[in-house]
Image 1 (tube, rainbow, N blue to C red):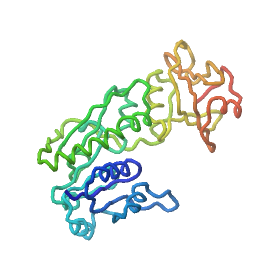
Image 2 (image 1 turned 60 degrees about the vertical axis):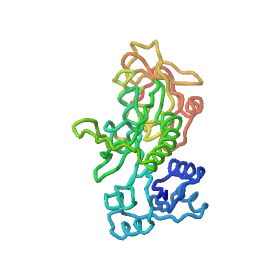
Image 3 (image 1 turned 120 degrees about the vertical axis):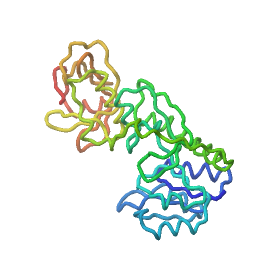
Image 4 (image 1 turned 30 degrees about the horizontal axis):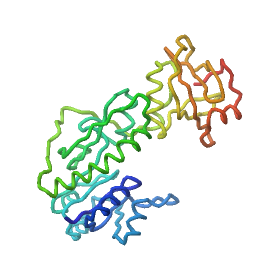
Length: 305
């Protein structure tokens, strides 16, 4: 079966590596356009190293792009981390259409930040879907799904790189086999169910220390490392990264520093505190609590936010 791989970044590269490693025939690779001054896309670099044709359309609404995809005479397009909208004319150009990876249990958490929001919401389960994309966003029929437990201390980074990333590569391989065997499912999503959230952006993750410890902690870990939950200190923005719940500070004032040591700074919120172990001050790189304390005089009673 001849495949097109459409994706980007480390996930797209890993999918292409896995497909090649088991002898799949790759007709071409499609990836995002280059960004001026940005790092080369790992998928693009790897594909070129393998001698594969690489295409980078700025838009998939161009009929010449549809003709180009048809000319490859591929059987299936595998979409591994695609952020551009792709219309059905391009999706259906391969003989068997296209399948796409999405890191949530569709129809829940449709949209581009589907890993952030379940953590921020305090949910304890998510997963991944391989589905048949259509003209709408993340609404096509489901081919297969895998559940993933969200551990109480999972961050965006740990949930993705330890679970959703490697499981996603394996799920794509499984889905390709099902399509090849003619046993792939097409389970329609119920349009009345599910949820959609947009990009998780900096404006969404300002820390309100007057919220409960659980709400604050979930926000921090759901935005770690991107886009990075943030607060202020003496008028300057500080991004909060690695943190833990700090038990035993039930009556601490919101945003007040309640404990300081070389390994962490505990900041009060309602019904508890959060112990911060890694910071990123405005205009600086990431710092451990010890490094942060060397740059800023922080004592109990100081206030964030």
